[in-house]
View 1 (tube, rainbow, N blue to C red):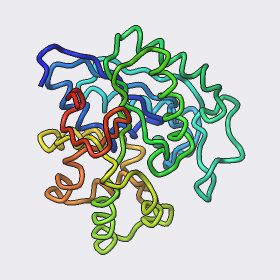
View 2: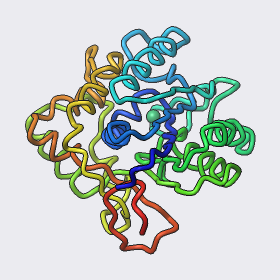
View 3: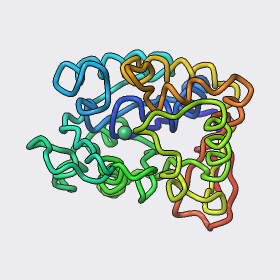
Length: 272
Ligand SMILES: [Zn+2]
């Protein structure tokens, strides 16, 4: 792999998204001597948590983000300061949302903010989400849109769409569902059309060496990793036993749109 240190910017919607989707790759790049920058669009102040939504939750979640970023070896963390758009009870766009909700942000305006960071960092790589926004949270779809535009504005060479290989995920959820009782807000069936089927994925990054950091990064998001009357998604993931955890979370998946479909790469900076 390249010896010259490069810079990778990971753009996420809310604190804790980095832990689930890209933590292993971030830890790996940092360990290899690359500069890793984490940018979130919102503080996640409308996420599910025992303390309820609001500014206090946002502040707490940003602190959790800094802890997670430190565990992963990030050199810089930025929050663009948009409002968490939240989710409707049915999982779509919430009708009531803050004035500065990320999904209502002007694409060019938000992209301009991110592009400024990309230029300042002379970023070689930007990681965003797939067009479906993974499991479909409106803020995640917006990360895709804004991220694409920002990379265009800044002329960032490599754009990777972080995703999940749907096939093993469904298998793991089936297993977990047999062993644990899922909380009411966690419906494993929603994953059947989420993320990306295996044949569209261009990058399979082996992060087994970094699953300890990944697990620690997940656990750092205390408000999301501990339950009240019911467990949050992260708490469910953290219950997956060690060997299966390494199997499920030991690989991270990305789609790079400017390489031929069917390309199989193993490192974010590898040339097709
Ligand atoms: Zn999120």
